[in-house]
Image (tube, rainbow, N blue to C red):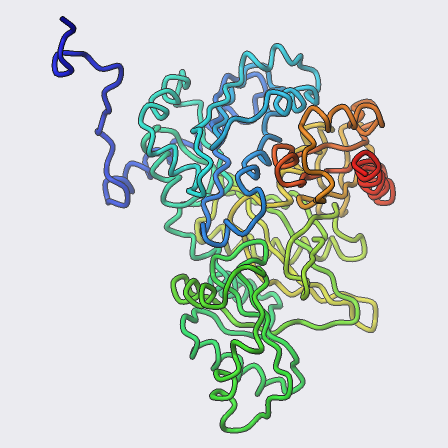
Length: 521
């Protein structure tokens, strides 16, 4: 007879020696782990030959109701595949975890781009793991719910003293993962995430002494919103529109635009605004109901601020890194390409930002970064602005939000940096390669068409090679693809088009779209 289940051994026994999430014990453990990261940063990071392990968690740990409105969102975990370029360092091991498996064709495509390292050598140092779970839950939550997967990750880390986690954004979930793995993470302690909220951003802008739109923060109710809208209108009677933003919205999908129309400024203005609020307000995410918008707004809080007008205005951003030694670096500037009815949705980016203002833009970003450093911010973050051209030709930069996470401008810049060995000079507003040449790019996360549906990753690579769209390492120009996993089902992908001038970068982008349309007609 076979032994009964009670007499059988188990292939895995869960260990529960980690402190429960959110407890003082977990906070203390996390603090201890993070304190060791400074030493690792100083000794390991500068040495390209030093052994190290990087665990990449591309989890979009954001509001799931809003996130679900993004087409093909599970494939956004592929955006951090740019970090496979770290394998150019011959003693670096990578562990990359996703919700669903990434196609071998996509992984091979990135390894093909590696400068100075064969794909075979890189593959030996790369472990791709998957939760096999396409649900909308954050990837980090999926990992924490799989103790066998956690144990496998631990076994793949030979030395925790030379390992770290890099994440898309850091929340209490990533904090718990760090503690359970015993590995530090390169990001801001989630206890300080208010600083990256819309309300916290406005307070930091004031502390930094930079311009910001007139507005109000720490709002929660419909009445709060109506009163703030009324105050804005009273202080600026010519104001036509205002923006209502959830504290933790992203890519514009947590925003709504209110149009004042013919509202009369009198004693009943607050009451009248509240009465027409739903009629004269439109959410940026078209399939996000107003009921859901107000529910989320009350839950996370938010702001109301004026909609900045200008005959010529741009939407640039500044990317910064604060490292564990508290050094601040301005690593890039971009002009954001925004879409939607009121220009609130992030579509893509142009790098660097316009040469007429990118130096002064970086200076404003540095002022804000100094404030954030004092508040304990760590890692990579971005500051969004609206820049309005004045009659004398100068520009005024209005800070509008801080994103304490990697974003849509992170992976294009990292790809360029990894492939060219260059650096952005914020004082000159130019990116200079290791060969002392300037480079520019035009990037988008939102190239989409119904005609592209059905194209597999292999099909895309065939098209790119036939039409000579692949990035040319010798010329340091060409096209790099990302979000390739979303192509077949959703007809959507991302492009980073690098050129020796802004015009050449845009020409690569236009050529790629024309070829895709031609191949799919």
